[in-house]
Image 1 (spheres, rainbow, N blue to C red):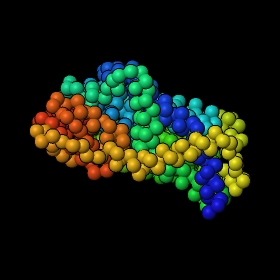
Image 2 (cartoon, rainbow, N blue to C red):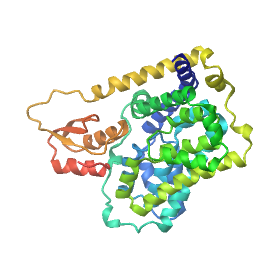
Image 3 (cartoon, one colour):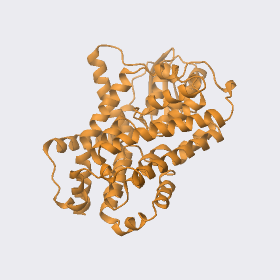
Image 4 (cartoon, rainbow, N blue to C red):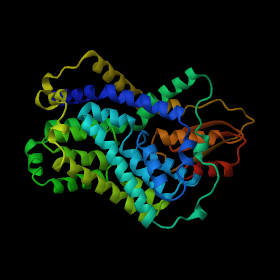
Length: 416
């Protein structure tokens, strides 16, 4: 048990400063980059909207569940199926937070290769959908405003917007990916302590077979881009090659059963098949590139990381990583036990206002909750809007027609 706790603490200390920086930058992106700017550039056919969608999606810190309503909104705003597929592939595989965390635990070459692989897979998948996907069903698309039109930056002074960015990065984002990050850390520590080295040494003799096995496990399950990092680290510490670990980094966050089911309904069966194939082929292709063609010294783990495996019982951290780890732990505790409660409290409602509660299907994270809340808050006549993520409900108070609520929710990419 002591070995497990020390391994877990070592991984957290190496990761915490960078992931906190990534969360803060994520808040700046959310607050100061208008979402309408993205959707304007993603319409039409050809390679340009596909490349733009990939470049816009790579830095965004959205998980595979959070990116789904975003992509649906882009489609209904006029983005092509090819561009939205490119966005769907690139966005969950990486992000500013996961790139920073990848650098902290796995080193600079991994941090560079990750967005490059995401870009290649997204552009390839988007172009494949553009060429071989189903014809665009323009009758299903409308030019009505979608939820992005309501996802406006905070109004007010620069200081107020900075505070809103900090809150989004260190509260909303932590609430969105914190659970999966914690699971990834626990799995990494468990693998480090309890899985015998000989198992992975034997797999290294058959790299392609090992990569296919990792894909078979990683694609169906859900793990966010940041949560996959400590798992990949622990696999490398047990003897797996960097290329095999890289396959987990790319394939795990990009697809899961839930996202594939939703994609088949919104993008079409053929586009969904191309999406999954692009994720798998790109992950294995770059994994083989790392193992067979690139110098192995590039992907050697940073010096301090070896303590997680070889000297985990004697690992010590400086004051700054320790402070960052404590802050990250406090944020995880807050968002786990208090965040939902704070966002589902009741307000006093005037008797003249009518209150209706709607069941919303498809909300899976804090980003989904924020999207629905902003879409409903922008409706004319809405006084207060309370979205409870745990119950999957939205309570709207004011003189708002149910038809308007239903339309806003569907345009946001959810079912009511």
